[in-house]
Length: 266
Image (cartoon, rainbow, N blue to C red; front, side, top):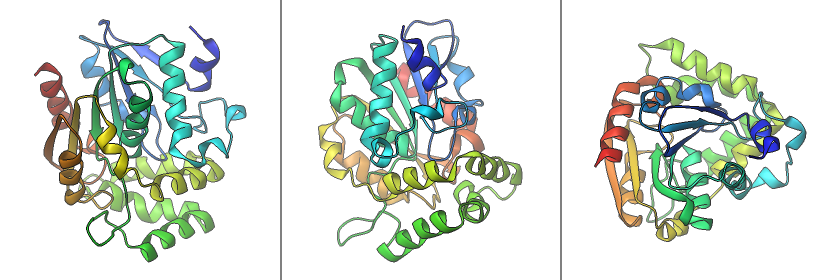
């Protein structure tokens, strides 16, 4: 086992099972965001948590802004982990942009993957004539500009919008804290890689069975995106959740756990 990779990506392993289930965090987040979901799978699986290079607990010396200017750089992190731990038959659970990162990794090495679980995924955030991504070009450029000019201000303003559970303000506060603990340079580079990517053509290349969990009233990935994903991924299942917002593993962990477990057992 490659200790360098284990340290670089702050890998944590638990569980009594043998089949690996890998939980991947979304933009501006780390593995702590899975704490209400991941333990439910420890009885049956080998649970693996990690962070992308650039997160607080990772080896920041390994951060390369050129590599991580594209999602392929993060997909390489995933492949590095699988190879370092010699993992096969992996269930990959990705939140938000990590869904696309896991997809890219699975296209490169499909033999290592058993299933993909995509939580609030989006292959493209930009609207065009025949596609609803949720943002027009002006809004998207404004979003990136705000991240680059005033990242803390962006985190403060957008965390409640992303979480969209006003009855639980502590969730938005936790998300904001996670954003703010991320190095602004890392966040800006990751934001550009996330929001300006277009992976729609890659959906047809997925060969791994896939579960798409689409949240209700999601400001980041509208419901049209969930249907688009399902229509363009062979052997996919779409579940539209009761959960509102973009982070159901935080706001609605019971529903998230149930839907993932039902899919895996089926």
